[in-house]
Length: 223
Image (tube, rainbow, N blue to C red; front, top):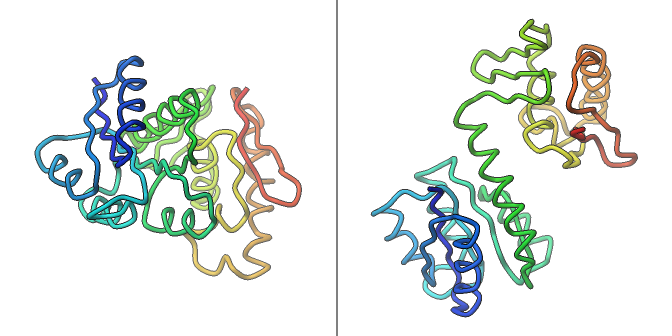
């Protein structure tokens, strides 16, 4: 059973979230501050963390930073009243995976948890399959109907990122953020060339299409 740790100092909300997750088949443990959460994590493995930001003893930022020092992969979802860009930017830079603003829509919470758990499974298995396309991260190889497709490292990483987060829009900079020099205009524009090449190489693929989001970037839309 999937184990989720809920770290939220509002007892009423904490209980509501735990009750809702339990109804959906998750095993849930709750606590009310980051220090208590760290103690719980030292005693038991969890598959996902839901954490508030503004909490006593240790806030969500410091808690997430502590978690990332020992576990790079466990999904962390911030559930907070803070809706400012500064808080979101700080959270993502620390290494959280998603950000949900209060008041909480419980149906949306369940959807986001499902997506985070799916991505975590992809990260663990190092393989991603969409339609007739399989991406093997360890081998850095793409397969269509079992046949290998020749592509560059950048092309592979771009399509892997797009398909790891289906229907999410990425800017050119975000798609090239693991490569040096992307800040330059030529570096940012080079992603357009990679996308064109990917569309040609993956034209026989089923299950998704690469969509241009005008003025923003690209996303992989599953069909």
